[in-house]
Structures are given as structure tokens and as C-alpha cells.
Image 1: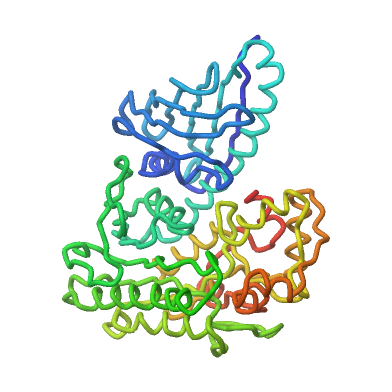
Image 2 (image 1 turned 180 degrees about the horizontal axis):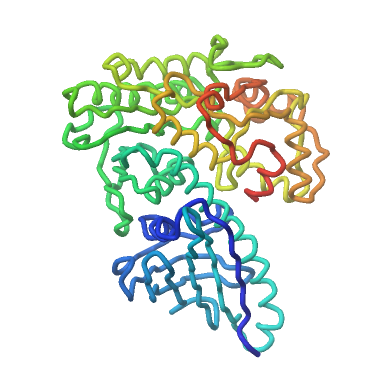
Length: 464
């Protein structure tokens, strides 16, 4: 029985040379890994572009196909192609050809061609090849979409020099997607890390230890053009009490002020020119169906107070003349974590539920549009101050519940009343889960940001 094959060709908004360069840059494989895949690079040996470049990956392929995969890259033809083959892994045979086909004058085609053979002989091929093909179809549709989107977003600012960007929270939910986006776009990243700051392998970024409540060593910011601050204690890890609420506040204001003061303390000629800091739509509080933009006043309650203090902690950098953007993050959708990640198990089990009345507005945004919005703030001189980082079409909780049920093909008719949520979760139920915020991304739209996912149901299908 011959090997099975899979081929996907897609147009790309860049030349073949730039398409090849994007794949050659650090963390390209990480950028191309779908969020539903349990895959991570363990080690790398050699250098991309040199035959013998190897990567060892821990992965779940499909069904019983799990474990360690060792891939070797070869046949490097800059601007045109490279290949990789399985040296060790779940397949009896696997060879992947990446072709970059010119489409003059400025665009190209990306073609991925795979030859594979499932294990376990003829029975494995008869029953396994089709399953693998279905999985490859989903994975590579995702990969081609991300590649085209990233190339377009980087092309928008191709007239500007590539930056050296210091990032806190680089291993968190957003940071772990943002850093590969930056590196594949040609930017350099300095990770400011608490705890272990020793990389498991050379991932093309610089790892530096960081004390969140102390000034940053000026040497660490030497040559840094911008700082993106994403670190902060999670709000939903446990029930709130006085100590937890104080930790939520302190983990945002203290480190933010320390970073801002470190930026401001540098001489003007050595000072980063941009400071992008995470914030939250919690600024607005529970506002029913009121349309909320960056010009809307703050709400009342614990979350609005936290966010006001958080954004005020950026003052040293802002007052020193550094362009500062506060990304008021909505509900960031990714199956890797956050609100969507926590709901998936219940929804897949047919236990999806409307929360409270279901009438509360849910301002959502995909993880990929979140990364793109942060990049817009990083690169566009027109972006400063508060930036509502949400999609253009918020939905009610009831509409969200029904959409996710349809995407997963599961019933979602259950209902958790407000009283039950308060008993189960405490104060966070009213402050976050049941709060209604109909937030609009006015500033992003006014500065020319294009959303990849403006509507909820297509976004959920893409992510899951």
C-alpha cells in the first residue's frame, strides 16, 4: 500500500523570500501550533538553514498516537523550500515539504505537502490514514490562516524598524502567543521572568530574571525600544477574601509602578519609546446595556477601583513623555485557558449553562486578535491611553452559551441562577461573571485595526 498524502496550498500576502524568512525565525513552530494541540518543543539541536537541524517535541497526535517526536529538517533552499522528516515518533513514515512559490510581484503561495504512513502495518493504514488526514486538514487550515494573518499585520508596519521589546508575563496566556508573533515578525524579545529564568533551549529570545516589586536593572533595558507589561495575579483561582483582593490589587499596581519608574529613570536618549500595559474592561463595572467606549467614565466597585489604580501606576512613564497604552482586555478566548478553557469540559459533556439571567453583555476577543491589538498599540504612534481590547460585536451570555453549544454540537440548555453562582463562587460572581459590559473597541477601529474574527460563532469554530 503506497504512502498517504496531504497537500494544502494557500495564497500569502508576502513574497516567497519573506514567507521563507518568517518560517526561519525563532519560535515559528510555536506560532503555528494550534491552541487545542498539546504540543511543546523540548530541545533543539543545530541551526535552521543547516542540514541536521533537529527538534524534539512532546505531542499528542491522534487517538493512541502520543509521545516524543524527533524531527530533522533538511533540503534548505532559501526563499523556496525546506523539508522535515520524522526520525522518531508515532508514524511509520512522515515527511513534510514546505514550498514557498513566488506569485510576482509581491505575493506568493504556501504549499505544505505531507507523505505519511500510519503504524501497525496494513490495519493501521486502513483505519488510521483517514483519521490522520482529517487531523491534518484542521491543523494546516489553522496554520495557513495564522501565517497569512501575521504576515499582513507585520506588513502594515514594514516601513518601521524592527524593535527590541521587553515583555513581562511572556509565559502566560497572552504572552505565550505574543512572543512568537513578535519573533517571527523579525523583532527581538527580552523576557523579564520571575522564578526560573534559564531557558530549556535557545528559543531565540533573551531570558532575564526580574523582581516585580523592585526597579529593573538599567542594563536590562539597554537597547530596549519598548516594554510590554502583562504580568499580574489571576483573579479567578480561588474565592475572594480580604487577602486575595489585596493580592489582586498589589500584583497589578506594584509591578506596574516599578516598571514605569524604571523606564522613566533612564536618560531620554536611552529610554524605551513605548510602554504597553495590560489593563481590563473591569474599569467600567456593571453597566447593563450602556454602550461603553474609552471615553466612558469608570464604574463603581472593587474591579473599577483596581483598574483605575492599575492604570494610574503607569504615570511615571507617561509623565516622562513615553507613549503609554493601557490595553483594557475583555474576555480573551482560547481553549488553552481563561473563560473558554474553563468552560470547554462542561460544554463538551453537554452541561453548558446560561449564567444568571443570561442578559449580561459579554465583551469577547480571540487570543489572536488580542495579540494583533497589542501589536497595533506597540507600532502605531496614534495609539495611547486606554484601549478597549475587545471584538466589535459583543453578545449576551445567553447568546454565547448557545453559540458554543452549536459549535461543539452539544446541548446547552442548563441554567445556573444568580443565587447558585453567588454560593459557589462568592463575590466574583457579581463583580465579574454576572457583570454586564457592552464595550466597543472604538480606539482600535479608529486607528485602522482589522479584526480577524468579528463574529462569535466563526471565532469559536476557528479556536476549537
